[in-house]
Image (cartoon, rainbow, N blue to C red; front, side):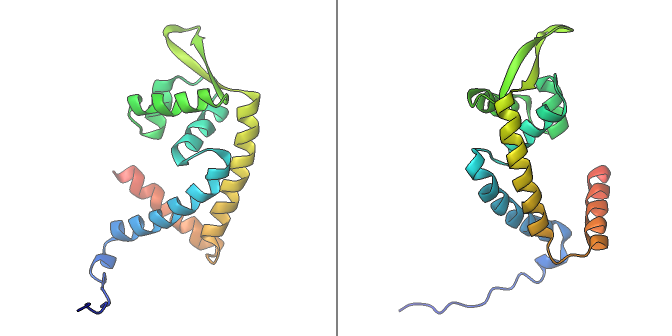
Length: 148
């Protein structure tokens, strides 16, 4: 005999900000994954490429710190971008033990296209919110991040 499906309530969990943030993040991540897939990128590789484009000469350790990612994991993301031909590692003239990361012309082209798609993703995700509500969300998230 098959049991009937019953409605499951998460009302108590909805009282927790973190639970609501996690559910919203799941929706955002899923849509972002679909958005970035045609470019051969994921959220972390896009973020990595973005930081390298915006900060030419960045060292991998600086990149890991800025993105709050373990250095060992950062190597994997940089390797993926390098294998795709979008990023190069060059000896750092100030520190021969470190490498400076630079975006290639092909990487800049992919980044520009992916960034436009991510901007459209952002607009889609925030559709229905007024400008003041978006500003409030950004401000609140910033305050939560600083408070941690």
